[in-house]
Length: 146
Image (cartoon, rainbow, N blue to C red; front, side, top):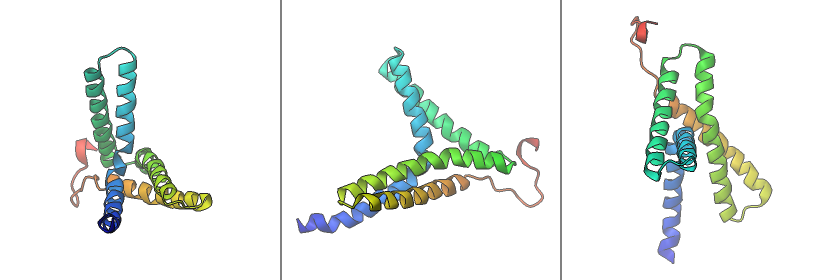
């Protein structure tokens, strides 16, 4: 019992770190699962639906990273970043709500902690997406002739 109590804190910290690391993948995961389920419901086999969902998730991630890295317009960059950060913030809110519910935190504090978690996880996803920005050398031409 004591060993379990001692391992709860590092395990919780590890899971929070995993949540921050995987937060940027919330939108591709949602797209992949949605397309895979739609394919399966429309009569495709399970293997075909799985492959299609996986391909859609990978394509969404790569396309989003490329759009963010290559876009010169701040409005387009903001839109792409919000497309990735908002689902991550929602996932962070739900995760913190679940953890707080397990700890028997009162309702109002669960919502406060959930909002703080959403802000932190959304910011983490935003910064991880910004890490995919292409570095440009001083005076070098923009990629793809722009």
